[in-house]
Length: 498
Image (cartoon, rainbow, N blue to C red; front, side, top):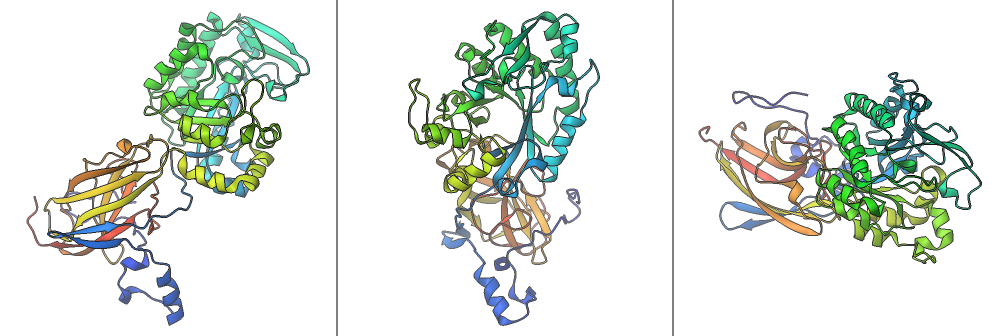
């Protein structure tokens, strides 16, 4: 792909594959009137109206189809190769929990391929990946989730023989090695591991976030069902700081479950750490992750499988004696998450899809952000290099702001599908598009590179200013293969360069 051209040359990037409504009929090469009529019936263009002066008011057509966008969506568990095509079609993010012993089986020797293979698999499908590394797991068949060499080096350890449990979600029978999470030897070895993990993966664009899972069972910040010493607020804060020290560019995520550590969660999210809750629809109504709202994404995981919660009545809002059981829609409104696990993966995800597809499609758009351009007031013509004034009205129909990097871009394309010029107005701030609100922005820009002529004015949301192609899909009709949305025609007349 070509880089941006300097001020003395015309920028020519990948053609946007303009929709038919933006291409003069003389350029269409069709075979037969029937093909022409069929294709024209598919064209969806914005409605336009004259404004006072030399301006046009554009009202793009809104659409209701499911959009898969970065920084939000349904989460699929496990490796990419494990997934069914039906789940992949709706899933936005892959996720997996690893054991520390899987990644560092011997001190200083790292099996990075375990994570690398997961990253490569999900990336090949065009999806990002998130993961966490646990130090204790009551479901593990291997007693040593924290590597045995850590304990051999002097870290304190409790060997717990778990008997048959009434609640299958509490763990599986067998011996589990549980570290003392404030032990100095354990913490020193953990710090070295996290430093190596950060050197390897910090800033990797294929990673959406990394869970902080170094304390408690499953890394959820509690000691159930192991029992034993609970960390103090300062001790737990030290665990979080070790992760913050190792990851400066990749977002972290913390399980905000234990009430005793509310102060740590609040401190963490203020620094951009996402908040997750793994008991949604069961012992959580989702409100724990609301603390991250405005700072970082919220992440939901169901308490158990869809089938199990349905049998207990929790899914439909029936309450247990302990107050468990919450409707998912209520949880989403309470916590305003950007990500939700698609049940527990595998066959359960497919059962969930088969039984709740309308709800799943609704929440695919509702969780996180869901943005449309509802109105644009744009110039009909301008002199080359002249400052253009536009008014853009955006609607965010999701429950959360946009937490991923985003910027608005406007581009001029000619009839041949070649980019004549592009601008990224500084007055537009997608991160400020509040959920369930409309935001109107007055922006100014210039198109000094476009020679005099008639162009197609296109709009899109890119990852950052300077990017040549959009990365975020909008809930309006007319998206091109390059990710742009047509607004109107724009005539550029001869004018002096600024």
